[in-house]
Image (cartoon, rainbow over all chains, first blue to last red; front, side):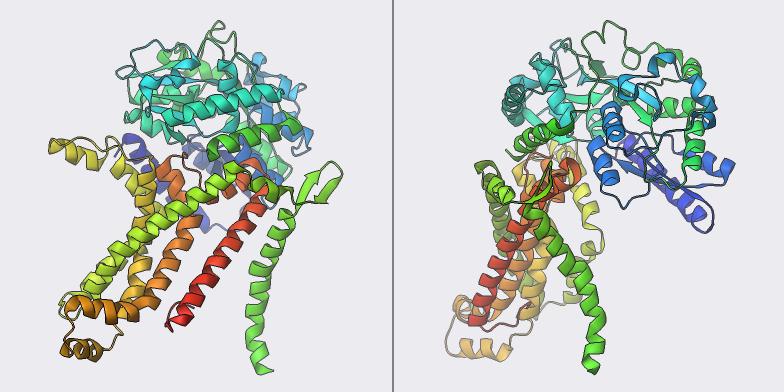
Length: 347
Length: 274
């Protein structure tokens, strides 16, 4: 049994005790939070409940698309969600988000200027940055003796059945576009067809298409390399020192996750209260310290261990990011991406 | 009149939770979203009959058939052992067989993942015995193993319940008339248990052909089955029309095979599932 599994079990236990305890306090206002799996120090939820007397109902999702479809389909009533850049852009376009009243988010001042007014929310009315990072390759130095500096290594037959890919269409298609030298926001069907062929060619080499379980697999050395988000890479390196992370030279995806208030929210003010709470220095620090992702919070970053502050995985240099691109919303063209991914997976 | 009042709640329940959803699925299946709103179209079905999706369908049927056959081969002798008279610990055995079913099937499938991993328990034992490692997690065999493991009880129990009801005097009569044990089995036991076998086949084949969890967990997302395709369309892609069309094809397939089964069963006058 891996450590991760044990901690998860412990967390589940704690969470269920919390649920059981708060379960009896009826009539309390509730707040429904919809976040990525493994993306928060869950103890801060308890702190929030104690401080404001608001019961938190916490759900998780595995991909942006997953979250989007649940909110878009209706029937849910989430107050806070944590989508990425391109998904925020899409949700703004489709009028799925409330404008945030920044008077209620005084802690917004702690967010570094370079993370405000980014393209996906250019006048910053809808989102408060939560974490950021890159997509790259994590590899086990005892199992890989080639230099890992290119996406090509994921197509190297030497590592057949030792490669883990992300079960997330924008990411997997995105890195293949980069490998072929295209933009990861391409709207060219021919380029996508080329990507499809590449991914189908790669399929026999792939051990599995995974989500969050990639962490357990890499830590317990079930595979030699995997495509991962940088923050997860930081965590995996903590757990297994044989692991190393690289951003391929062809460039990759630079991403930002931010907190938003979906239109499904019934109590926007409580949602703002929660976002402000999450942006306070000690809570932002706790989350960053716990999950290992890169924080846009100036004060929280100062509190981190030197080791983490200087870790190029979490805080890459501008050269590393030279060829990186941020995902853009593709609107209608997305159906082409859907089709390509469906066909790759069905093969 | 009285009867109607008793039936009413069930009718309402069935309308809301069975009839309406099916109408919705059919509605989504025959429409496509265009810029000018929803439009009636059979494009979704046409798309399904592209070779790549037919391959998925074929893969689902093939894996489900293999699992069903393995379940039958393993399950029939098991049912016979359970039903045999001389066994003292019969009740204990039946209980042992049922106990795992009390646990959620998702958990049991996750457990197989830790068993089958490269550094998992099975390989640790193999390595300890100086035997070569077994790399079967994320292969087709792992998916079949998962199906057989999860659905085997559905094969054993119907056969078992038919076998224990067989009148023992028939077997004795056959023996008295000079049949050896193989002939008894071939001419008496097996024909009498055919209804159980058919129920078993149906109860294993249906969930196996529609599963998506087993293929995702033990197949590592590499072996897309029809269930995965439907799940993907609804949860990740958001193409409800295509997802619905696949579901309809699936439903027709199941209806046809059920019709086939029940016809066969009637001919054999069994006391089966339906």
